[in-house]
Structure formats: structure tokens, C-alpha cells
Length: 430
Image 1 (tube, helix red, strand yellow):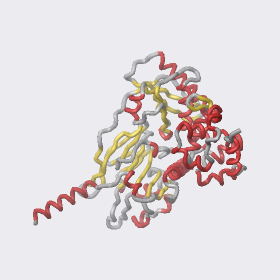
Image 2: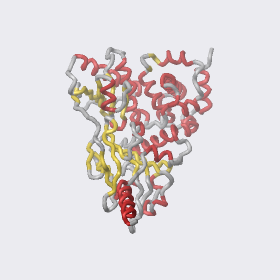
Image 3: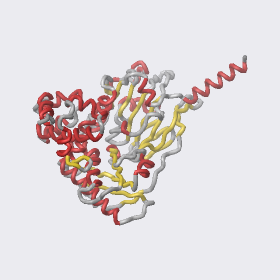
Image 4: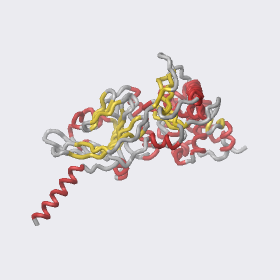
């Protein structure tokens, strides 16, 4: 009997030491989340985090409540927290994480992240973590299990939910995507640590163009160092610069913060290094694009691809944070002027009689086939700009979430009904 008790005790201690926190996927399955947005940063950061909450809420959890970080008094312990809390923002921009301070196993500092004794440096470092609950310890109050999305710098967790994740209790992300995952483990004193897995593969890259200091629209193009230099490199540089210029002009930007473009030689390489096999994708918070090497001729595929993807990096500077996939992807198609190499006007002819209502398009955008959703998004942005003008689109419509579309239209001097009527008319069969 004593031996069995001893075995049970050892087993219990081993389980406790593992601090079996759920993964984000498991956390989000257990009930409707409460989004807790950071409001302790600069104005642009607060807006980015608010838009990110609305983006995720609109796509997956339309009934989820949203509260500001200042609504939680951490001094009152776990009872003061809402159910299933999902925090957006780092300790530099989120009052709850700032108040918990060094009691947490992670801290964002200028230029990096300190996590369970390891330092991850860089202005592209971010964290997705399902943090285990902490019981009260004397006068120090604990907290419930919570999910956090946070990052370095003013863009913080912008589009962080778009990174491939969900099964890991802890995931550190950089400009290439998932960098290293881990699981929580408590030490003998109950303090949280992390057992890290092997980090993802990272390669060296070479600069392929010279950028003058003070350039108001800096684009840094990079190729893999292990791939020999060829004449195609400069052709690709030229195509990338043309694509970025096309988008900037369309968005009315005379200057923008520097962006980095990584040119991958083939799809297999891109998937291996970023876990994303698409032709191109953007990481707005890291000011980074990843693109496949392709037709670099004037007006060719690479130029168009960059014009689309770079718009995601320039959106905050051009119109402010966007809170819906429809307006985010729609703006990118509109700024590039085409989708899959075809002008959006051609797509309109093909989609006559097939366009859903504006309300349905907001809600179903990610569920539609991409070759339907993206052209419709570009055409929708084009219609909105024609109806209210670019200035009002920037000011009122671009950042609207589905739930605030009516109010946004009113602010722009129109109505949701008027936009709906114009949309219906544009796609009516003649």
C-alpha cells in the first residue's frame, strides 16, 4: 500500500512539474473567449491592437466580448479576470502584463523578448503563448490560464494570428515565421520555465541592392547566400522596386518605413524556411515580404505580386489599421490594380450576377474561393473609393469592422444602404 501511495505521489509531482497548460487550440475550444486589448501604448499601437481584436473576432468569434486591459485589476486575483481571457499586446502596451511584471516568465524589452532565461533579440520577435494559471501566493494574487499574442515594437501583435500556430503551448516567432516552440515546466519552487524544442532552420541572406541613406521609400531586397549570384537577381530587384512603387503611388504615399523583401528560389525552399508555400506573403509587424522568384519582366508576375503583398506592409501608413479581411485583402488587390495578372475590371465582367451582398461578403470573405473573394474585395474597395472619395475612404471606411460598417458609412457621408445599392447595381445582370 505504501509503495502504491509513493508511486501516486511521484506521478502527481511529475504531472505538476510539467504545468500542463493547454495549447491555443484547446484553450479556444473550451468556451467563448474574452478579448482583452492593450491600451497602454502609443495611439497607433492601441489602434493596431484594437483592429487585430476585431479582425479575429469578426472571422471566428462574432459574439465574443471585448474589454480594455484597464478593466482588470490584477491585485484582486483570478476572480477579477473575465472568462477565457485572450490578451493582445506586450507588457509595454498592455496594462495587465505590465502590472504582473517580473512574476510572468516572459518580458518584452526594447529590441527583444526575455523568455524563461533565454533572450530573443530583434525587432521582429513575437510570442504566442497559453500561460498556465497561477495560484495565490501569500499577498500576491494569482491569475487564470490565459492566451497571449504579443510582439516587439509599435506594431506589436499585428496579424500575429495569421502565423501558423495552435498546437504549441509556447511559440516564438520572427520575420520568417515560427522560430521555436516549447512547453511549460515548473521548477521545485513552482516557478514557470520552458522546455524548448529544436529551433527552425534559418539561413544567411545577402543584400542584392544598394539603398541610399535617407531614401523615403526604402526597399531592401535579399537573396539566399547559398544560391549563386546571377543576372536574374537584378531583374528581380527591378521588378520588386516597380511593384513597391506601384502600390505606394496608388496609396498616395510619398514616403514609408523601410521594408525587406526575401526572394526564395523555389516553393520548396520557401515552405521549408517560412512554413508558408504560397507565391508570396507579408509579415506587416516585421516589415517583411517573402516572395517566390518568378517572371521579372515589366508588368510581370513578380511586380504584381509585390504590389499586392507590400500593400499589407503599407496599410497602417496609408489608411490606418484594418479590421476585416475584406478591406485588408481588397485594398491590396485595388492597390496592385490586378489579381492573378488580370485587371480587376476583367474580373468584374466574370463575376456579374455572382456577388453576395456587402453584409455577406464581410462575413463570408475567408470562406469563399480565393479567386472569387480577392477580386470581389478589390472591386468593393474600388466602388467605395468611387462613392465617397479616397480621403473619406481613408478616414472612415478602411478601418471599419463588420459590426461598425453602418456607423463608418454615416461618418463618410453615405449609408450602408447606399453602398449596398451601388454594389448590387454594379453586379446586376444586364
